[in-house]
Image (cartoon, rainbow, N blue to C red):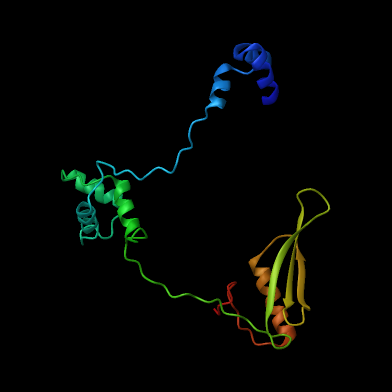
Length: 196
C-alpha cells in the first residue's frame, strides 16, 4: 500500500493520493516523521515526600509502646484526633513495608504445629472405618440410608445395614455389633484420628 501511495503521490500530489487511498493527510505526515522513541523516565523526586528523618520519626511513632499493636489506619486516626498529621495512611504502610514490618502488628501466640495421629493396621480387625450414604428409593422422596463398617487392613465389610432414617443410635448399635462379632477391644477415635 505504501509503494502504491508513493507512486500516486508523485503523479497527483499528496492531497489527491490521500483522497484516493482513503488515508488522512495527518496519518501520512505522521508516518513521514514519527516521534522519537521515549526512553525510560528518570525517577523524579516528589516535592512533598517525607525526608529520611521524617520517615524515621513516623516509624518510631508506629513502633512506640502506645501504637505498637495497632494498624496504621488507627494510628493515623488517633494522631489526627490529637491534632497531629504526619503523613497519609498509605505512606505509613509504605514505610512499614520498606522496613519489613508490614505483617501482623499484634503480638500473637505461636502455636506448635499439630500432627494428625496415624492409625496403622498390621493385621485384620485392628482398625475399622465406617460411613453412611443415601440411596434412592422406589419413588421420589424416599431414601434408604446404607451404613457400612470396613476393616482397613483386609478391606472386608465387617458390618452393614440399610435403614429408612439416619440415626446415631442405630450407627452406634451397628458398631457395637461389629466389635462383638470380631472379638476386639474397642479404642474409639475421633474423625481426625485422635483417641477419645
